[in-house]
Image (cartoon, rainbow, N blue to C red; front, side, top):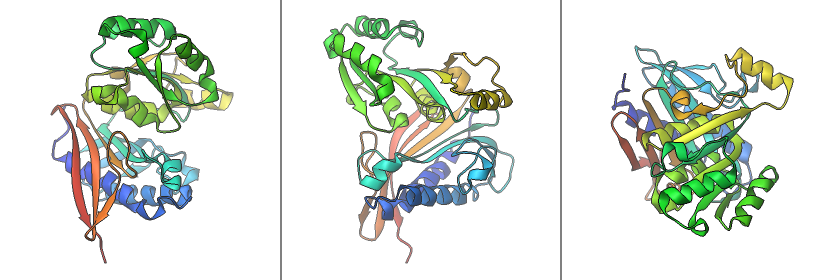
Length: 316
């Protein structure tokens, strides 16, 4: 069943207000305060909606309040039952240091349709919808994935661009990309926005790959779904505690490779509002006593993939 399109404006309000709540912390080196402000705002705005919502991807466990914790019930009630995935501030360092690309992010889907991802790392790839589905796979080598992409697009290897987090754990991948003379876009943070680079030619990214956050993988998959792009993920469990938690969440096969339609079932709405300006959207602009925000919105069933600009008057 499709989510009501009327819900889109409500969800835009949630991320816009959360982003605005961070404005006073931009460049102040106070990432915890920025995250708390966005989290409190997001909770407050979702609780105004006539929904029965449950956080399936949040910022930790119940004992980590005031974060939006996994299992937290939100909304004022009604007959709309939703799974909610949140990242009140993606890129807290970007806010603290006034760097590009901080976002406030949310995804909602009908109850049971959003994957309940554990707080662990995920090995992932995201690929443009111009590349045949079978051309890339998590189980292929970096070389095979890149060569198949180049063949599919009829491009030289030197004109392929791979985006990944600039982390020591990716040294082997980076060395391989250098050997193949592939262009790289190394990002310091911002796992969700990195994956979204494959959705449009203007970003000039052919594949996003590497290890990042599992929750961020689910959020990115929600947006990518509306663009008909490919996403695959496999969770990485580093210790017994993580394994035990995954099993409690119903994950039986710890080595399972998840395709997009297993992470996001059915319809979803995704919103990402800019806090600081980045590739996807502009950051908050204060003009004539109004906050001007930009939000990337996707809604699968209505084929919506657009940027919405809105103004919020400062309350005095």
